[in-house]
Length: 156
Image 1: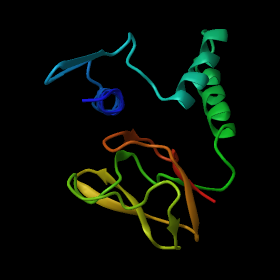
Image 2: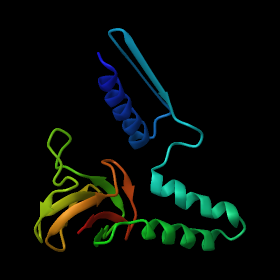
Image 3: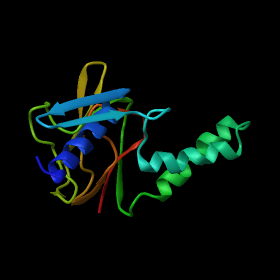
């Protein structure tokens, strides 16, 4: 097994660790052993880590800090049409775990194409593309809990 394969496996394990909110993942293959531990607190995506720095400046103002978190995160989004979640639920990028995702970054979509599914109360809600364009960013990972009005993806 070469170093590139090990790196790819390690990256997949880190993604699984973050997505499933696990504390530790260990994998042993042939002559290689990979062990990845989550930092305290659990790892966050890059956009969230920049936004998380804002509350440290004003810990007493919790409601103000929440609105400050949202503003920097939205400023970092690429220009384009933001597709937002119409409800609270669990994000899924494909119809089932063994099928390919509805869309990938860089893929052209037409208005009305299914972008993802949000599961709420055991009901699968398809999220459709509001316009024609190219998907330039997907903001959620399969299994992530999404909030109402959270940006799911950006279409250029």
